Length: 278
Length: 146
Image (cartoon, rainbow over the protein chains, first blue to last red):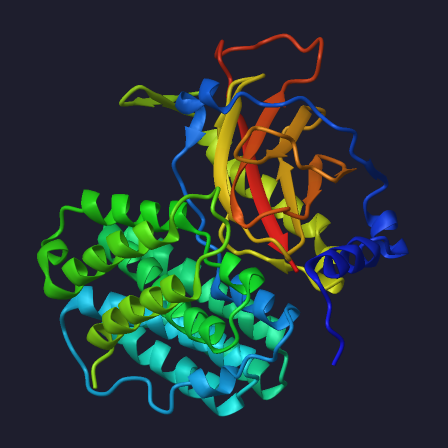
């Protein structure tokens, strides 16, 4: 196995981008000169509040670039939660974990896992009155999975999340859109932390340096006014996020200790277990 | 053109229609990057700016990934500025590219952390401001990673 350091990886990616095709598509292109420093404190009023949460694939692909092959397949669910429910808060949280489960199955290139996740996503979409919006994505996921076109499956999972968020916002269900996002992040973090602990390195632990994202979710969930906010699972999510935020420390401390990673895993796993019905 | 003023915000219906044009222009321009293994995110930022106005976006980036950010407006001939800074305000843009109304910058983060993306769009120099006096410029910002 070739053991590449981050420096090696960065050199490789720098080289790989210098392909002739891009130069044709992007005629005016050049290496950037060093620009002026920005005084960030001068910009508070100009800051855009909208946060785009990284998709799970953005984090998972980093694990595959680092030494040590993660066992994604061990995290593909054999069943994707049983039964049905009518509580829309719980449904939205469950839906969020399912999107992340789809990304996990893709990372494992597990056809059966992707198909099961795709079917369950459609079933939950129906319970959330979003079947028509999600059906084209569900079909595209199955088709791309059949063709083992994994980048396309990832794209469709990302599209599914965006469609669901937009539809929920149209239906004035912004709360539910937040629940989908945070649950997906928690399920992704649960799996990531487990794989990091299995073969700990500072490079891997640095992936968890996301205190601002944890803070973003805390702020958003705290601002919500719907009746779901006081429900047991949402309160568990909020309490867990506050501890995770503390453990993630500040951006200046790039890598978490193995113990902190293990603690974050325990918190995320506990929350996800509450969300996904047995 | 009629404008609607809601809670202090000036919203131009025409600009709203054009926001998707800016996004569409980016998606057309980045096809080559997809072939090169970049995943283009479905979620994107969009909005409107007065000419010369700036916006700052905080975004989580991961060391080990390579990123391209693309900014566009539907209004031809505008000056488009797009920069990425670290938490200390130090510019981290490695490379830039322009294709028509689309401006792209490449970043390979030195650290997994929050970064700041500066968006600035100005009308073509010499163009007179028309009615309404403050006409907003639409914009869209998309990113991709590999």
